[in-house]
Image (cartoon, rainbow over all chains, first blue to last red; front, side, top):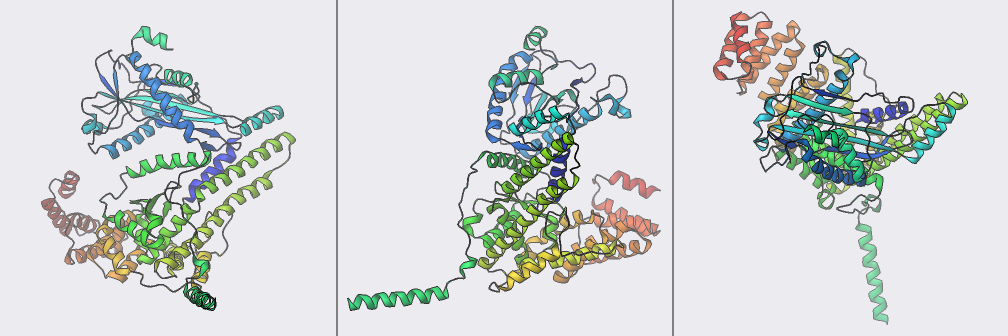
Length: 247
Length: 392
């Protein structure tokens, strides 16, 4: 009695994967006129969503628990190192036994949905909804309910980070090479990530950086550092000189 | 020596005697490893994903988190598969009107409210929980993943090589897709058969599993009638079906059940008592499916067991008000009033009665019901709009 649609979608996706390379466009969005003075606010880092695995020959995602655990560790280290360059205090989220856990998980998913919508309907200008076409407008939010969560008291902003990596398996790479020789296009590997900053008072999304073709191998510390640098590109409020050095 | 021979002989006789009384060896359950940890890279990866999914479901607003229902359901699972097997299971009850239950490779089980609305006794409930547990015990999640991967790997090669050599590959691709779905159906059958072994151990009636599929078919027919369609029951599964058809499952499960000990009490009353506090919530979710025939069938089934209680009458009023033909509005008001007479106390009854009456042209009566609602719930989130409605 497992969900039939899931299986169908997976099979369909896998059968289409060979001929549909992902077309993406890197971009950063900022709420108009938003700026963050260094040393003035407290930012909470929410539990990052990290997925690392292989891409099978047929294009399926093969989750890899060891790589994901490694990446989680390296990304946390890299984020810790990058903190000093962000200009403001960043602390990791903790439930503090307030019982907010379920709601916070739900807000993380809401953030993912909002971020996906921004990527789809803001970062691709051709897709823009009529209300998002006015000049440089960047009006996205997730409601003011966040301000009522006890475990987030004392914080001003929440930083959400999410990465998804599929490394092409040997089979996929061989398929790609054979395809290339014969003139059939096959993509190998998926590396997506986004980072966003949400104002906890108003629920507004004040900054989002999304990239569907990211660099940096998150399975190594150096790669994770590179990935974090890319994720935090354009982070508002970072001191200019350090930002330049960070890139 | 003679004595020892005699001892041996009596021991042998004793053995033979006990063997004659022992349980049929074909019904013995396979050995079970408790607290199993995933072993290879694929399995660990799947478990990781399952752990993340479990976090999401655990924190979902759709979870029925008062604890009592989940405790009851876990108790039923333990009766069905035995204490040893059920010890590590986390069971989550979800408000979702679909007829479904599932278990992930990491041992988290989800039971949807739509399924709880449809089972008629604890035996049927236990049969489905056992079936899902069998998927877990047989590690079907992992095998299904590997099968899909192999299938799609071959499909990718066929596509690329076909593209290079300019050969049409449609029929090969199609048969590969077919093999993926066929594998899935075979797993369902395997889980059904192991599920029957649990039933044989549990003391629930052996025919519990086949009964579910019979009643599901009856409901599908009611849905089809409600939508003015023709119900189709097939014996053979379609090409893209992930499960064997209800008809074939009902047949083979009944055949296999005939070979088992008949079993005992299906514990009808226990199920009814455990679900009673949740019925209003489950029925509200079911009503939103816009499936008049199916919902009506479920309501009559429930009423056949417990009589028309106030909750059932209210849900029936909601069902008719949602379809909203003139005759339905008339009936809806009647059901609401019967529900009130039967003891339905929440103020939303007056609001919905008022709305049904106004739509039916009985404006004065409707206003009276709406003001009763506002008297009882002045702080309701929709109070302002109801005021506006009454002023017009």
